[in-house]
Image (cartoon, rainbow, N blue to C red; front, side):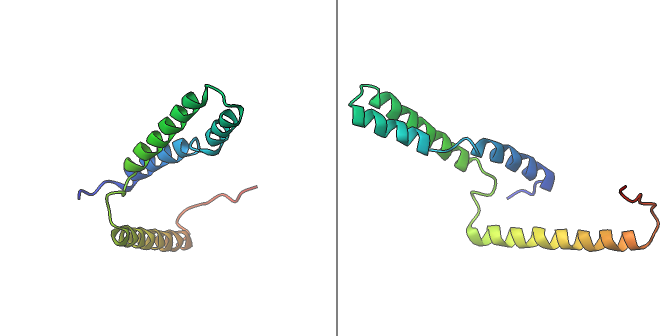
Length: 107
């Protein structure tokens, strides 16, 4: 496995999150049920829409960063990243306490 910069993963994750909001199946399922109740010939069209939506969701899941990693490896990576954030926050607080910077107070 190759190491990627954290920013690259975050950019990819951000675009995935934006697209994820569009994957609600309930409206399409509702349309399918309505067509079935009315015995409409549009049932096949609505079912095809649902199949397409499911396929798009599968492709999106397959493209997610870290999906190829085991859950334990994901947990390990998450723990490492949390430790890095904690260390960086501690360093930031240390540097702020040195009073080397004039930090304007919000007005």
